[in-house]
Amino acid sequence: MWNAELISSKFESIYNQNPTTVIKSPGRINLIGEHTDYNDGFVLPAAIDKAIYFALREREDRLCRFYSVDLDDYHEINLDDYAKSPKQWANYLIGVINEIQEEGHQIPTGFELAFGGDIPLGAGLSSSAAVETGMGYGLSQLFGLSVDRLTLAKVAQRAERKFAGLNCGIMDMYASLFGKRDAVIKLDCRALTHQYFDLPTKNHSIVLCNTGVKHNLSETAYNKRREECEEGVAIIQTQFPAVVSLRDISLSQLTSIESLFPPVVYRRCHFVVAEIERVGRACSALTGGRFKEFGDFMYETHEGLRDDYEVSCPELDFLVEQAKLNQDVLGSRMMGGGFGGCTINLIKNDGIEDFIASATKAYEAAFNIELKSYTVVLNNGVEEVSLVPGE
Ligand code: ADP
Ligand code: MG
Image 1 (cartoon, rainbow, N blue to C red):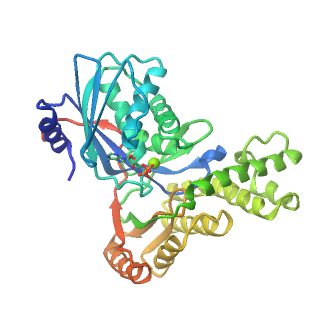
Image 2: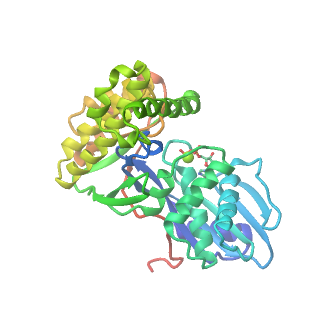
Image 3: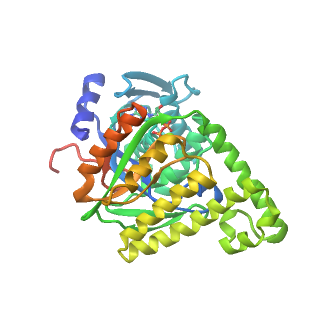
């Protein structure tokens, strides 16, 4: 189990000194609202109890030393003269150092850093965002920079875009920074404001099932979907000139002009517009404590992603079908960009063990892959943790 003491002792064994600051930076899930972020829509993420821990200490010179415990790898840069690294993991850190300075914050001296945690890499739980937000918040705390959380989210997003080369949205970083215990975050991706909705886990929990696959289609398909959405907006603008993105049109308006679209582009737009509306309805279900209805929305999202947006894959579809066979599962869908990663499932607490056991058996029989499942707790966003046990 990762905690402040463990990362501190790793830090000490590498640098022969105590760290002065320890940060816990969570991964995230997304309940509903897939592929809506880059269409200016709404998403419904939450930070989770899987996290990366950062231990830091100032230096007197300009050297920044990074040690990745999980990869057992080391990198260093000088604050006065640095560049992208051939080591991808280091670029997330260097990117944040660069972008926080671009915001006008001075990093006065170098520092030592050790980091590691239990967010599975590349499973769609945004380990990369956790690395970035943990680094950003760590710098802010270590040097007393008082950078606000929204600025940190933007800094982290730019770091990932410019230094890791991924044209990502802001949801992952935002969720890692703004998470709240037992709550989901309804994020308006245009206004960059949010509202919390309670999702207590007294009776139901969130279980993630990791397909263990990542089909290489994902990056090309992602870019293609973005283009198709833009193509759709251009068609819509011929009838509704005020529309800037798919966020601005209702489902009934879209349906009324279906004949103008190439069928594929229409299906893409239909999914996105329906999904943006679904986030709102899902939040109303949470407010009313209607978890069954919320679960049905998750299934609807999966169908849309599978049939209209076409970003699912046989492994994800199989796991969602397994969920449907089980009475204790309220809802299930693929989570993230698609073509692999995890399914997210809302399950009655009493049924979790049985579901995991039967899904694991069936998945192994069908795909010969061991299914890894994680029951997660919705948790607070990035925070500094005390070094003294019990404090
Ligand atoms: P994810 O869905 O988990 O964000 P990404 O491919 O975006 O997947 O990010 C994974 C990358 O982030 C890793 O390849 C590594 O470079 C970096 N990373 C994530 N977690 C860690 C960690 N604990 N230690 C070192 N690097 C990490
Ligand atoms: Mg990532």
